[in-house]
Amino acid sequence: MDNAPIGVLDSGLGGLTVWKELRRAMPAESLVYFGDGKNCPYGPKPAEEVIGYVDEAVRFLLDRRAKLIVVACNAATAAAIDHLRATYDVPFVGMEPAVKPAAMTTRSGVVGILATRNTLNGHLFRESVARYGDRVRILSAVGEGFVEIVEANEEDTPGAEMAVRRAIEPMLAAGADRIVLGCTHYPFLAPVMRQVIGDLDVELVDPAPAVERRVAHLLAEHGLEAEAGHRAEYAFFTAADEAYRRKLEAKSRQALTMI
Ligand code: DGL
Image 1 (cartoon, helix red, strand yellow):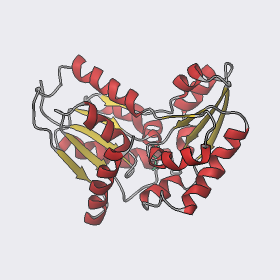
Image 2: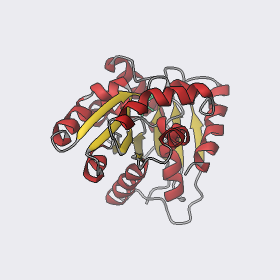
Image 3: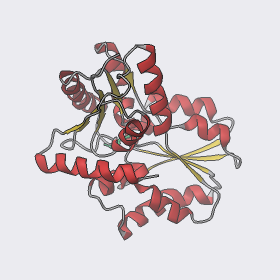
């Protein structure tokens, strides 16, 4: 039993789409969230640089007694998860695009994967494609501008719709019936994606619930679960400024209203 918090990190606001899943499913667990904010986006940056930022975020979370750390960022996982596991004793849960569930459930045999450049170039993703690519057709694309739109709270604008159209219309035209959200920022754009998809029978695949199940499993395995009825606390930190920290809090409330 351990009432210390679970640490959650991302380049910015995106990891809140995972945070909200943890908060819902584990009401006794305190969560400490680190949204870098200063060095976002990670997606287009060299892996060595991202490893440095993520390492700092992890040390910050460990100083706040994090008992397990969720790297709620596909780009950070692709760059840094091997380094983190080799360096620190605490259990880590990383994220990678949910290629497997999409490939196992597609009826059309065409699956679209949206992610940032680092994730699509990373070995985790390339291994998944090698594993499932002979069974289904996998179309991948960078969600150009998506992270910036979410960071600016501009999901509800014509610019957001244009960016979403540019990324997913080719997938829809090719017959994709599963679109994997391979970046934790992207679920904030799910309402716009659903508008663009219209009445086509296409499912958006968000790995956040699977990550939550993995966290629950590891907590149980390591005997780290909080006491039942423990009063959970939610704290938000950033490498940016106080205005950004308040933005994290506001966005966390928005995340909780998402379906
Ligand atoms: N939210 C991060 C992810 O899941 C990426 C955002 C970024 O490029 O910083 O990949």
